[in-house]
Length: 130
Image: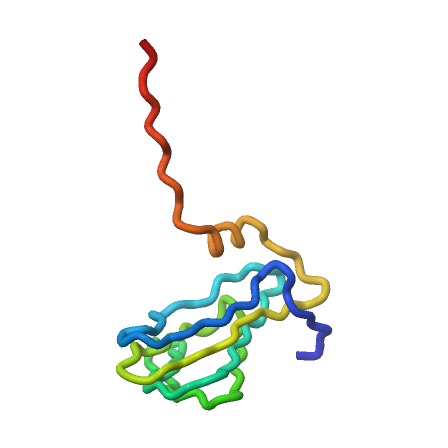
């Protein structure tokens, strides 16, 4: 990279466990939460699943597809390549996910709110006054 990076304090470190049939992640591009964009890190802790991690090339075709080995690491720059994890049919997959940022990166707080807020709350209906 040629720059000085550190673990993001704003993006929580996550442990994700995939163990139900159909578990996976649809095609997406990671949200850019910093300027310059953060580096998303995925460490495979356990993998007995049949899931495939896939990336699309710029023309939209699948350019890479692989099963991630235990102790393997995937680095993705946010806003970069479109990727997914295919739906699981069998097994279990456990990953650790975090993000590294340039030490001088500027954080986009509004983007963070959209990404990590729980489901939007419905506005309460007010009863009309008598």
